[in-house]
Each structure stands twice: as structure tokens, then as C-alpha cells.
Image: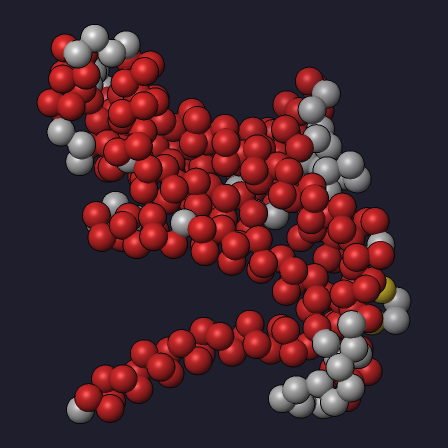
Length: 266
């Protein structure tokens, strides 16, 4: 019985890692080898696919563009969500529950619903094809998510801490930055992680609002389709490099994510 209990999670992990291994495997193959048949490892490993990405400015600038607007969005989303989540966790006001639900409803709506309004708005104000345009557009679904996560962490902090800080003569700003934020560091880490990941994988809005200067890597990956067919090797290499930023973020906030799941808010 114990062997079966250990076999189930092991099999589950293997099934999860199989697509990742296959992607890495393909990234070291030539296009001819990929299309010729099924092989478990490269017969003639090559770095040509990665060389194409690092030598072509249009490829590596796509990663820079994606990282640029994703990091900007994460800073804006978490920065805007902190005071909003504090208000929801500490105060009761007219329509607070309805407003909280409305914020979450923005996260439930498909991105395609907002693509055209954002395109027309940013075209009118001259923000089209900029990192700021994509970062602000992604706030539509990341700010509500960050507010929802942070509100749970803040509600777990006793209100007496706020009162004691006020009695000790701390201003609200000093209390919030020096005392309160360290207490919810895990929540901030979790919120930043999910904002980063959702902004990193979103394609429709990012592709609609950019053309050349801020074009994300996910949109550039469609260039592998040509008259001669699909360049599978370059596409696989680009996919491997796309996974790396998310893996790095997970590594740095892994303890905060575990805490978030333990508190039941994530």
C-alpha cells in the first residue's frame, strides 16, 4: 500500500515534467531531426537554435520587452493593491462587499472583452506600442487579484497592532512601511508572484497594444511560421527561455507561496 501511495505522486510528477523535457529535447535538435521521427534525445545536439535567438535583435528584444512591462505591472499592481487591501481589511463602508466582488469580477472577464477598448483608448492618448500601455492594461486583472490575496493576509494581522503603533506616536505612513508591511511580507511575495505570472503569460492584450517597439516574445514566436514550414527547433528554444524567468521567480518566492497556501488564501 505504501508503494502505491509513493507511486502515484511520482507518476504525477513525471507526467508534469514530460512536456518540459520534450521541449528542452527539441531545442537541441535540428529541424530536420525533429520532423524525421520520434527520438528520446538529440542524435546530434546543436546550439544553433539558441544562437538564432541571441544573435537576432528582434528575438532577444522580445524578452526584454516582456520583462519590462511585466515588472512594471507587478510594481504598479502591488503598489495599488496595498492601500486598497488595507482599506478592505480594516474599515467597513457602504458597498464594501459589492465593490470587493466587482474587483474580482474584472479578473473573471475574458481578456478579449477589453482588447478593443484599450486599443482605442491608448491610440487616442498616444500610449500605443509602449511598455506602460501593456503594464496598465494588465492592472485590470492583476490589481483585483493582488487586493484579494493581500486582504486575506492583512485580516490575519490583529488590529491591536495598528492601535499600539498609533499610541506609540507612529504616523500611519511609518507604521505601514516599517511595521505592517514586514508582517505581511509573505502576502506581498505571493501577490507579486501571481501578478508576474499572469502578466507574463497573457498574450492577447499585449499583442493588441504593441506593434514593434514593445512587442512581447510570445508574439514574436509566431514568426517561426514561414513558407518553408515551422521552425520547430527555434520555437522550442524560445519556449525554454520563456520558462526560465517564471522558474527564477518561483525560486525566490517559494517560501512565501507555501505560506500563502497554508493560510488558505491562495
